[in-house]
Length: 278
Ligand SMILES: NC(=O)c1ccc[n+]([C@@H]2O[C@H](COP(=O)([O-])OP(=O)(O)OC[C@H]3O[C@@H](n4cnc5c(N)ncnc54)[C@H](OP(=O)(O)O)[C@@H]3O)[C@@H](O)[C@H]2O)c1
Image (cartoon, rainbow, N blue to C red; front, top):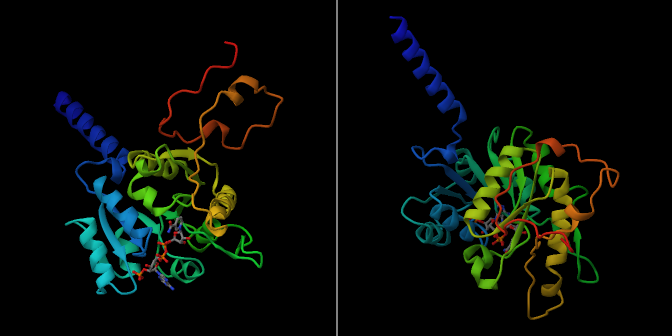
């Protein structure tokens, strides 16, 4: 009896441990779902890539019956479907907000409860100034505003500084493309980092959600060649160096607040180079 109890307790412990540590993406028995709000350039690039990674893709559209929305579903695969924006957001464990700014202000406040969901903001809240270059339309960042409207959501800024055709096929530019990720939620940042690496892109931890402002500034810089009507675009690439490791000392700076709890990012570029002269 004692032994049975022991076995039962052990089994119970295993079941509790298993169920409590399984996130939907890690559980091969449960197909994770991504809700992609918007069926435009970015939505129809990200959807098929998520589908390749084993996600059920549910698009959210203002016009789910439109030819455009139905074509995006066909492009994505048998398991994809399209519904209203709110229903798609409710269906997703991960929700990608792939709509333009300013419409995002209305969209992101009308998706129902996003509590506990990873919400990826890819938007560029900017417009052209008189000189033709971009200025931000917001005082903080779109990601922080989305977080403030949805306090229970795990907002992540990512996929914001690259073109949709690079998401379709990262090899098209002939080298790695870096995707900075900002979030206040470490686990969310790590999950999105793994997805980005699995898509063949190079994720980097850009810090807390507040650093979305810098990502959005990078977007405005990224757009410069287009606005200048130059023929070649840029794609950002943060090449791993040796530099900080070689010169950093304790009195160089105060550590960041989350220094002891940094996100683990997939290592897509291998180890840092050895210090010069070593
Ligand atoms: N395109 C890029 O390469 C790129 C790169 C980096 C970041 N971004 C950012 O990603 C976001 C999406 O870009 P995109 O190029 O995919 O945009 P898009 O093609 O212009 O539009 C995206 C989709 O959003 C929905 N939408 C448009 N207006 C709306 C409104 N007033 N209310 C609700 N939904 C609306 C539409 O889907 P339905 O018709 O199905 O409703 C539309 O197809 C933007 O914030 C953009 O700044 C784009």
